[in-house]
Image (cartoon, rainbow, N blue to C red; front, side, top):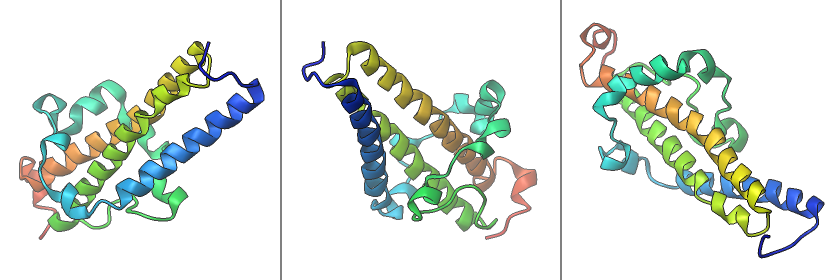
Amino acid sequence: MPPISLPNLWIVSIDIFAWAFFHLVISIICLRIPLSFFLKDTVWFRLFAWEKSGKLWQQFFLVKKWKGRLIDGTAILKKGYGKKRLHGTRVSELKVFAAETKRAELTHWLSMVPAPLFFIWNPVWVGWVMIFYAGMFNLPLIIVQRYNRGRINAITSGTNKRRTGAFHE
């Protein structure tokens, strides 16, 4: 039994409003973080060797097949850096794109944080559904960001010598 007991119509309405609110507020907060924060190489966004410059995500999740079907939040907010396509092929432009994948990744990690709050007004089983929803909605978007950043980092760091020659500073 949740601490707050409400009629089902109210619960569903609050759930929808709450998720919209959390996603919007977290997105706006993350959009306000300066790009310089994401251009730094911090431990929070470091790619691991086992990710194989993004190849792991393609190998296990076939990212290339479905990533184009995902909605880019900038289309909804009409603000931010769209990541549906590259904004240029120079190394500096690719580094900005990689930094913006960090912003998107942070946004989606933070978007999962409020999920336990849904236990306050929902039955326990619905609270677990909300946690499942948070993961199923955000994890694919996080995977795409890590996949794209791994590929870009391989190009910009020169680990992919054949491809690097195609780009210029």
